[in-house]
Length: 264
View 1 (cartoon, rainbow, N blue to C red):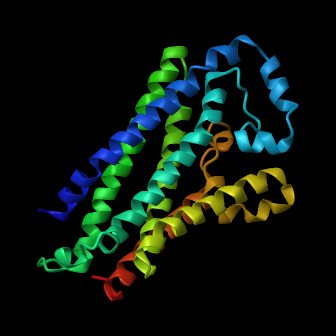
View 2: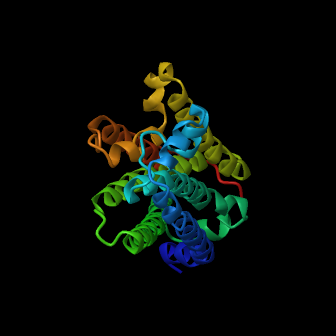
View 3: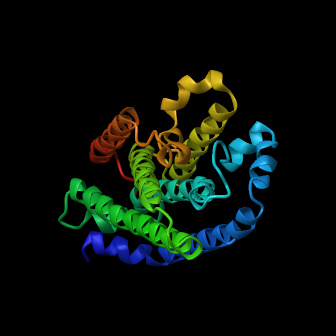
């Protein structure tokens, strides 16, 4: 069977569960909007009185929770973390699972090059990634339209575009980790560990202005809701950094996988 279609077929059950999780996250999260809206500015004052640490964790900085866009911006901080986790797991397992599940020999006896194997797995991963993003966008637009039929959806489109780039970053990083690491069972832990470190760093930067220079080290600071839904929008330096990370880690993936000794 074609490697591309084989990977899509094998991933269908896990994707269904991710879709269910997305549905629960978006629907349950947006269902609280009416309560926020009815309280007027009181809710902003309540959250504004919270310690800065809690505001950073909940993604509340400079967002007006009484507006549909501001409220969705808060929910986006959880959606983007979920999307990043999915991308990191997808990238790391796509490459490492053959050795982890002892199917490397079955794959390597086929008349295909290692480059084609990685390319096929990358293509399948991109399809799954775009599907995740498309479902997130559809659910988000549907729920926002349900509560505010006249809402401006341009901000949501920018958020989903930023989330897609972030997904591509962690997908490529996960694949690179799996291609370089010689312990297949450790690749998921390493990839998710890197994700957690960068997320914690983004929270730390939000808490301490003195750490602002480190914002280039964490992709979670590249596409923040308060910027994408505000006047700042996308910043060229972050787009450039994202492109460098994605291309650099993909090149590393192809090169490292060519040279590594696979465990049969």
